[in-house]
Amino acid sequence: MASSLQNLSAYNENNIPDAKGMRFGIVVAEWNRHITGALYDGCVSTLLKHGVSEADIVVVQVPGSFELPAGAVALHQKTVLDAVICLGCVIKGETNHDEYINQAVANGLTQLTISTGKPHIFGLLTVLNEAQALDRAGGKHGNKGVEAAVTAVRMVATFK
Ligand code: RBF
View 1 (cartoon, rainbow, N blue to C red):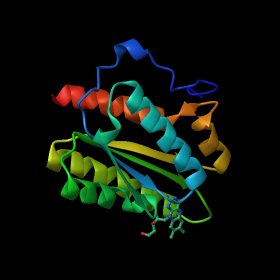
View 2 (tube, helix red, strand yellow; view 1 turned 135 degrees about the horizontal axis):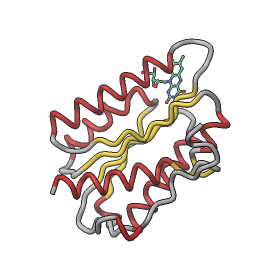
View 3 (tube, rainbow, N blue to C red; view 1 turned 180 degrees about the vertical axis):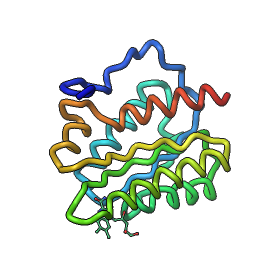
């Protein structure tokens, strides 16, 4: 497997644009909050490390990952943002709920990116079990919240 034992969150910090003055929204799903909380911590610390001020980060919590696109819309209605980072964790169960939720989030964030002209970052873990989620929320495969933040900063710089 390509990602086997790799920490995919390792990146060259010197290659990331200065994020001072950029304004970000973060939408966090409450389902599997022990995972999404770790994604959130990694995301915020990375934004701050690259120069974003705390005042330029606006956060909203939503019940589950299916509500991530709606949370992004709510943030846009409140304030002007350069990008929105959406964080969630959908764990496969006995039914196909995960496929419907994941596809809806992917479609919703794609549509929002196109309709607003602002990046909407897919920070959704789409995992088979909790162990895979923990591996990607500060475990052996890094923290996808960190990667979502880096992607957001790079994309805002691309749009500017
Ligand atoms: N939301 C998540 O963020 N992660 C999940 O693993 C998750 N599993 C769900 C499983 C089922 C069977 C259902 C019905 C919902 C689940 N949700 C999950 C909640 C979903 O994202 C959404 O909040 C609700 O369906 C209400 O719209």
